[in-house]
Image (cartoon, rainbow, N blue to C red; front, side, top):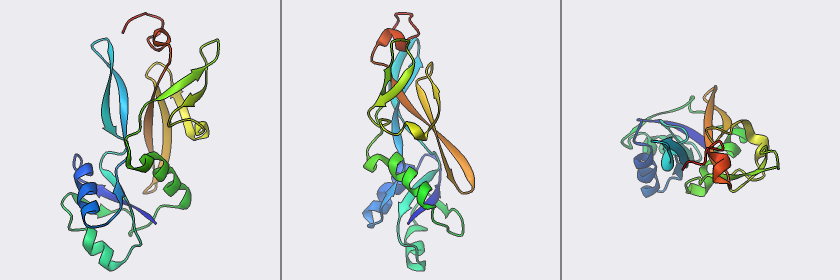
Length: 170
C-alpha cells in the first residue's frame, strides 16, 4: 500500500535516500521541466509534489517507528491512511520507476493542434486535464489527503519554430 509522507520542503530526495538505506521503498516524483529564461528555453529538475514523499509499505507500528525518526519526515498523512487504488496507480505512474520524467514530444496535425504525445505522456492522454501549448505544460491532477494536487508535465514540439510561437527565436 502506498502512504503519503509530509516532508520538510527541500528535503524530499534526502528523505527518500534515507528510507531506501533502511530498506523502505520511497519516491518523490520529479520531472525535467522546460522553462523560458532570458528568451531561451532551458531545462531544469522540479519535484511534482514539493513537501511530499510516497512510500510503498505494509503499515504497522514497527514500520511507523522506523520511518518517523528519519530526519525531514514530519508525519504520515491521514491516520495514516493508504492511498486508494486509483490514487496509488497515478502516483506509481508519475514516479516513473524512480527515474526523472523527461519532457514528452507533442504530436501535431497539419493545423498545429496536438493530437497525441511521444514519450512519458504517450497513451496517457486520458489523464491530462488541460494542455497549455504556450507554456508547454500538460496538467495532471491527483487526489490525496482529501485535496486535489496538480502536476504540470512538460512537453516540447518537434518543430522549434512552432514551439516558439512562430517567432523563429531560440
